Length: 234
Image (cartoon, rainbow, N blue to C red):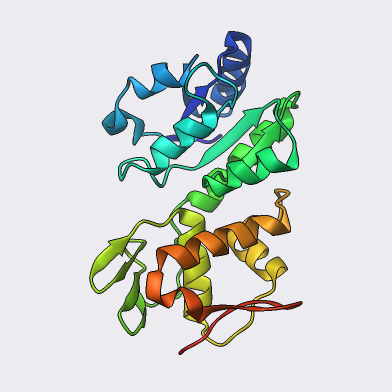
């Protein structure tokens, strides 16, 4: 049983909310539901930050799931909350849009409850704080670029950079082993669980965003055609 994990389900189909709530609560999760993004956002970011995971439908009223996710990722209180999109939209472009917004997984309707429970468990496990016996470095630095492992934050010249969890993990991976070329598969295995189907292009999308966010250090993340990505000292 999974205890002390709060999940918010946002879907304009009441039946789906009830089914997900019933089955997730049977697994020991604490579940709240909302039938629109507006209803969920009415809680306020201070209340929303209490959730460890959000399941968002995409096609909802004036504020879509994509738009709600963008709003959540833009707020400090909710930026790190994992998001799973559950939707009838299942084209590749929709999937890429979801991952570009920082989603952790994407499930198409109709879905099996067993699959949803498996994916929820996988995302929560990946997002849980690491508790490893071996001591990891407190920080990783290159010139004025610094990763603070305790705060799970990156900064340049002392100014924090707004990164999603996936962007932070990619930067940690590349910066922690400068000069090493990581293939897309290696990045997927270390940043995304191999239990979840993720497109190779998702890595490229996240790398592109990361380069922009780290400014003058963006060119340090180089592409080795046919091999992968590398952080090089310049």
